[in-house]
Image 1 (spheres, rainbow, N blue to C red):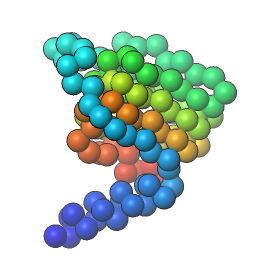
Image 2 (cartoon, rainbow, N blue to C red; image 1 turned 30 degrees about the vertical axis):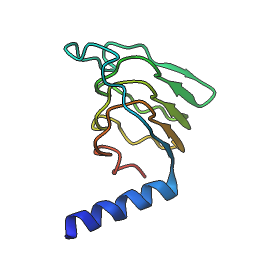
Image 3 (cartoon, rainbow, N blue to C red; image 1 turned 30 degrees about the horizontal axis):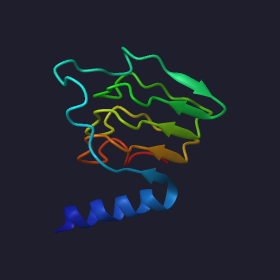
Image 4 (tube, rainbow, N blue to C red; image 1 turned 135 degrees about the vertical axis):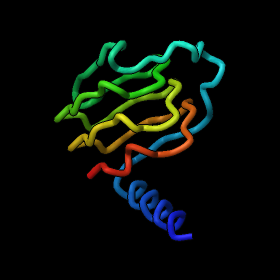
Length: 111
């Protein structure tokens, strides 16, 4: 009841503030036995955009705050949630297509 209503309210608020893209699943593309996080993947930044496409990421653990990041591209990974995504002050666009997302857990605390 109330918990679902709060989740829907938070989701609606996020969709008004951020441009989120999501669609499909990346299951089966990479061996899930080997967790990959930002502790093992190089971060590519430039002109306000961070691209972490096609990295087989299972976690955003180790993700730093990137003060000038406006766009974050996470397509084609194995993320199930956004638990380790710290609040990014200027983030406006988050691309999540082809992931295994089951919730927006970790993203609800963004400004």
